[in-house]
Image 1 (tube, rainbow, N blue to C red):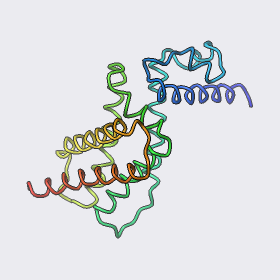
Image 2 (cartoon, rainbow, N blue to C red):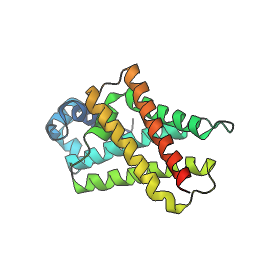
Image 3 (cartoon, one colour):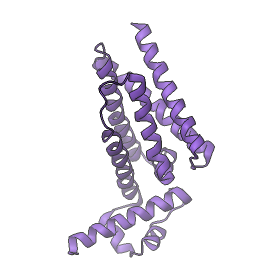
Length: 202
């Protein structure tokens, strides 16, 4: 590997170590020194990539978020399915993305609140990105959806994220096949109930 590739490898090792420590010990209880020890790099290497522990967390949050969205956008299109079926398929894939590596769910949804105003702004940006995906599904099946419905998409996304955070809290971060199904069912019921209410209010 050349110098650039080695630097990128160290960066990923640091992020992997941070993911493991933040999930197990919590953000507040994880020191930069402990992250470096787990990643087998020196403190100097950490500061070559991240100015602070918060900067490391933000990068990890974005890596987790990107991975989840990649998985959702890769879902094959099925032009014959109903809105309910597509909603369930997307939300089930969302739950699977979190359950396949429980650390991702814990770090992304279980710990990010209250870290700092900067992290909160990034969480809000991620929520808006998720809301755009929600609204794109609505638009596909409902020609009456407009930009005025953005606030409902954001609120719907907030509800979904809260259901995830609650499920993580109830399960101590471990998703069994039963809790996967329960969470996907709860999220789908919530979203379809909201859509029924939107239609009824017109």
